[in-house]
Length: 194
Image (cartoon, rainbow, N blue to C red; front, side):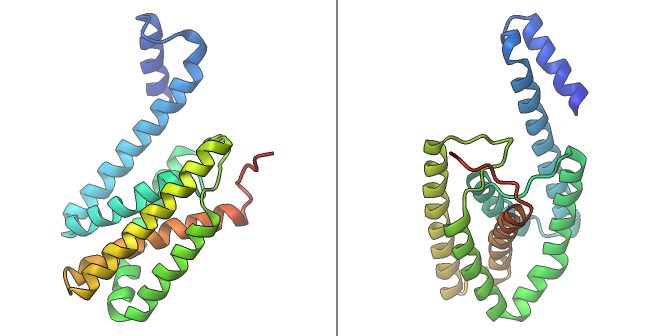
């Protein structure tokens, strides 16, 4: 991915679309973009094969927007991130969702504890993010609002008994996000603003 990102960036510089002084920023941006495309495509492909495409979309529509606002653990290498995403998805699909379906109390406890964790810990300002004080404030506010919205949706869907087998994927997305926040805290990946 790094070579492709370098080639794309150099092409933009040669064609005077971007300046040379922002080269490293664009290389990093392309690496992140390519990583996301590969991760999302893999998850959707696995979902299609496993026959849980809608459920996976619900997981992704919960987890990725939360993750963008909360931060959390970041792998040092793109391949490790890819592998970690794959492993997390397989655990969610094959273990967590089945546990939630069989034990509703665990699902309720998970979303409650995850909401508390997100409320108090988010965002984690990872060195690659480099958020300033205003951005941290905005991320904190939007993460809290998004968590409220997700919580209300889950309660409404559960109360109306609509798509109960799919709610577990929404709750799993929230739980994974909270787990990555705790992991980042434990590993001290956070940059504290002075």
